[in-house]
Amino acid sequence: MSAPSRQPIAPPPSARARRASPPRDQSTSTFTEILERLLAATPGAIAVALVDFEGETVDYAGGLDTFDLKIAAAHWQIVLAETAETPSMGAIRQITLRARGRGYVVRRVDTSYAVLIVLHRHAAFAVSERALVEVQARLSIEAGWTGPSPESCWYGVAVEAERRDRTRPSKMRVAGGWHHVDVMGTVRGLAPREKGFRIRLPSGAEMMLVRERMGRWFADERVD
Image 1 (spheres, rainbow, N blue to C red):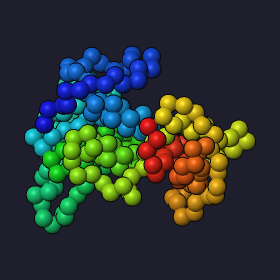
Image 2 (cartoon, helix red, strand yellow; image 1 turned 30 degrees about the vertical axis):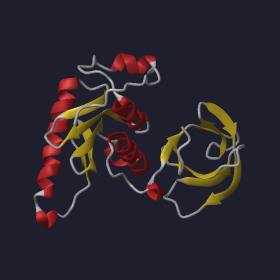
Image 3 (cartoon, rainbow, N blue to C red; image 1 turned 30 degrees about the horizontal axis):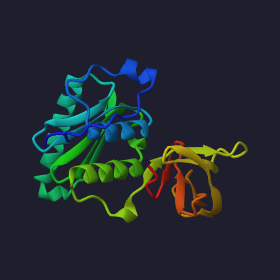
Image 4 (tube, rainbow, N blue to C red; image 1 turned 90 degrees about the horizontal axis):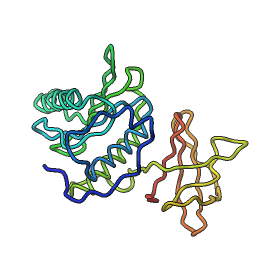
């Protein structure tokens, strides 16, 4: 599958990101921005690639050498495909591995496509499931795949916490602007060290916010 022709300009990367990223060997696309979102939402991530069933990299983002990233993406897509050919293993959606020098997460996002995340070796098992579901949902919308159900989707959001409690939301960035939020209640039954809130925006819209243990915020509705 070739990258889409329309190419909106993504927000400019930070100076640190520009220094870390090697020159690209292909034009950016709408996939690039989606992969950059995943990269930003994943502490310890070095690079991300979207790879097809033949092992060809469709698009990528991050600071790893482009050739090395594409070789890694092709390798892990082969490994993921081989597991599908082993009936005794069942349907495997994701492989997470911590090697001596790096960590790897390869996640199937469609029957013929997968996303590879290359990380610092201690970060592989801390990748957010919500961030992975979000990238699958956004890629599915862009590529026309059948994506995850809306009930299972979470979307990374920018939240400003209260000064006295860094785990409680005060403002949220919505459609390019910051808005105060009213906390209507808390949510129980989350994973350890997660905080959940039911909030209302000035527009009257209500949604749930979750702060994960690594400090990333997710909403159960899209606000961009």
